[in-house]
Image 1: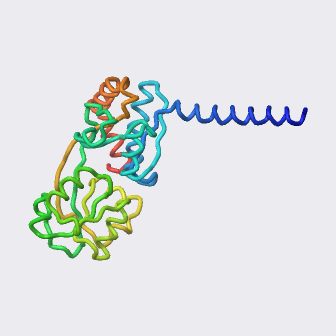
Image 2 (image 1 turned 90 degrees about the vertical axis):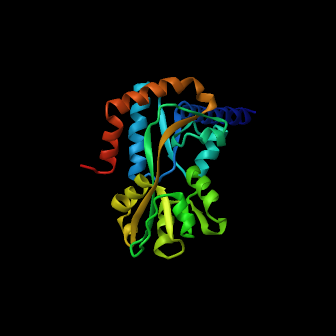
Image 3 (image 1 turned 30 degrees about the horizontal axis):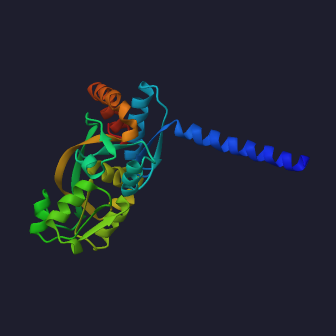
Length: 248
């Protein structure tokens, strides 16, 4: 009998430890970042949002994940926010709320083989030249524009930037399109070997990116807007970008 009682007490103790651990994690605002931790883009995002949430006296944590998975998890409320998405994002994922102050701009660039003579400065150029193209899975801007201009058989979505770049060097696609900062962070800093044999061949678009939160965090939106604007006006966001990307 005493043995059984001791076992019950031990089980309750372990159960409470698990609850405590889960509760401690859930107290933090979790942001999903669609870049690997080794990427300077990831460093930039962490620096910016750590500063924002510290100023608001809110504990924050970050998790690297594929871009498409981040969308699903935010929509389900399994993470609390994403750091930078296009204006129309909440139309695609209605459980999310846009923080109306844009955090930074995304330059969508096109890359091709070093031997290519292509110049691609618009989505229409891809259609006119009948090109095959890769883009990061979950990048809604690329998905929408490509599916409106390019046959599906000529489109490949990839889970990582380096996979898209390898498709160029192996000749499987004509171009790869992605956020310029994300590409430069990899080929200039974290994995420079991936830059061998490729070059930028144009800029397709430049759009503002916004933080999005799950609707359960609606009460934080106004505070986040104020803090983001403050850091932009003070030049802090640009300062962090130069630090992460080693720009003098």
